[in-house]
Amino acid sequence: MNDFLAARSQMAVSLGFHIVFSCIGMVMPFFMAVAHYLWLKTGNPVYRNITRAWSKGVAIFFATGAVSGTVLSFELGLLWPTFMKHAGPIFGMPFSLEGTAFFIEAIALGFFLYGWNRFNPWFHWVTGLVVGISGLVSGILVVAANGWMNSPAGFDYVNGQYLNIDPIKAMFNDAWFSQALHMCLAAFAATGFAVAGVHAIMILKKKNVNFHTRSFKIAALFGGVAAILQPLSGDISAKDVARRQPAKLAAMEAHFHTEKSAALVLGGIPDEKGQKVNYAIKIPGMLSYLATGDFDAEVKGLDTIPPEDRPPVAITHYAFQIMVGCGMLMLMIAILYFIALWKKKQWLDKRWLLQLFAFATPFGFLAVEAGWTVTEVGRQPWIIQGIMRTADAVTPMPGIVYSFYVFTAVYVSLSFVVIFMLYRQIKMVDKLYDVPSDELSH
Figure (tube, rainbow, N blue to C red):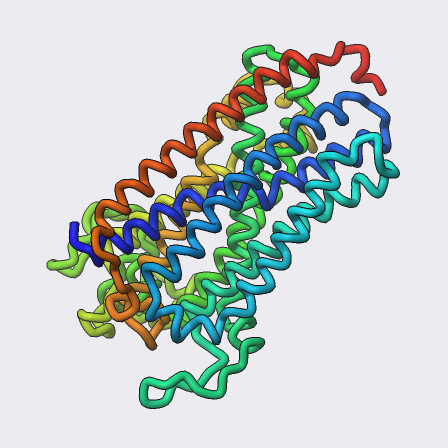
């Protein structure tokens, strides 16, 4: 592995782990706030216990997210100094504001964790809600910065110089809304299905059924709504990418040839030398419709992109297919769940419904990882779309290959620690919060 590849790999590994911690840290406080609200309104101790249990999970992921995010900030300066030299003054505002949101989140979380029986109950609830809102704002600001890399704005690029910098215009670039919407829904869907899946497993094992059933319902509602809305945000994103980054869209769909009434490709194995996709299912005209809203519209293929400017097709295509596949499976499970809530309440007691959620536990985060792979790999060879190439932005340190291995080991170890702490937390829940069934009547 050369230094350039090692630097990119280290950043990819760091982002890959951080995005899981940050998504859960963004979303879990809202689950916690809903459970807390239900306790305040109903007085049912089950909801108080759910709130307390989830607050400990929020604390765990806040700490790990803070550590992994700090590592990323150092890596930006150490591995990508050329990029930060030029880009920092332009898109530094969302990062600065993200730091402010992070501090508000930390303060609110401290109030919430240590405010039990010390604050007014409703003020205490508000501090928990602030944790979620500030975390969500923090995530949106980071995505806005990434959107700028996909849709540079807020400056004039003249003879290699970045002039007339406008940080506000840079932050609210053409990509920020579609990316932020898609990412937020992805975070809610992924976390909702993961949390619901864990509680479904515990219900199937008949462990503290009262506690886990109510926890499952809150998480499943959040995850299900997000999974149903996600295809709508995906449509917005597809049309946006088709307009701004036709090379990325072509790589996502392994669309080699410019044509009208372009077919949507499902699955398949891209053959870059033969400029075709083998073993794929094709739906005529659907790609044109998704990209433009017109079944007969022309969609640019990779043949319009110079070879040196084309993204890696295979990685981008496979990642896109994984993202869509996981998303569609979650959508179908969500639809079944809402049918059960609305029309088929007897399904709610069936093992097969819980087994579906248990099976889908990792799907959301697989989709998140695949989606970010599409976003980042699909932009290559550019780190700033059309302005700066990735190869020109990285300044690898001596021995970065060893650093990559060390950081990978650290993140893997951190993941095992988090898994162990969550497992211990679940075991403690079953011991501490086993509420008798008659209290469910509150």
